[in-house]
Image (cartoon, rainbow, N blue to C red; front, side, top):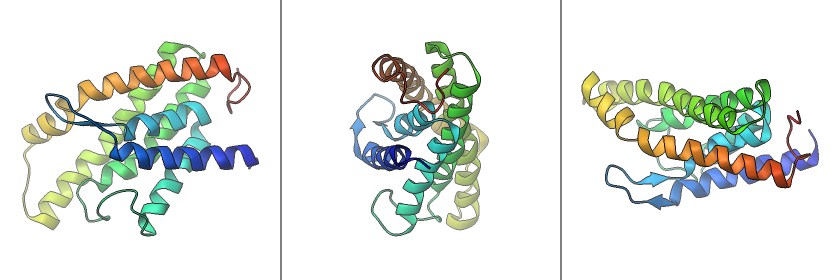
Length: 178
């Protein structure tokens, strides 16, 4: 692993941690920048280094650093685990398909979808078996898909635009250099 990628993985792990605490108020839910930095790690660093940066973030949290709230018993921890796959799939799409804005937006959206796919079932299972409060499918759909989706679409577009600008300024600093 090159030194620059070690530094970039650590930087993205820090950005993900910081993104947790940046809240933008919206009518439905407050937006955090956490998922933006997760998908950006994959889009900028590629699938492997993006996933590594998320693993560093999760490892820091599990080691006791205050980078995320709660523990593996927190119902939202499934989303945090989904960050690994979200960064990986965003990076995979960025590496596999032509480097253009729509590719990066699609990669970010796919990354968000993977995060949802991991987070929602985990939330349901923890709510039902650990907390003792089973949520119905309608509640899960409304609160965990439909309400956060507009913000996540905006963050995916922002991620694509950020990658486009970064590539213009630093064309040789991507793991995937097509």
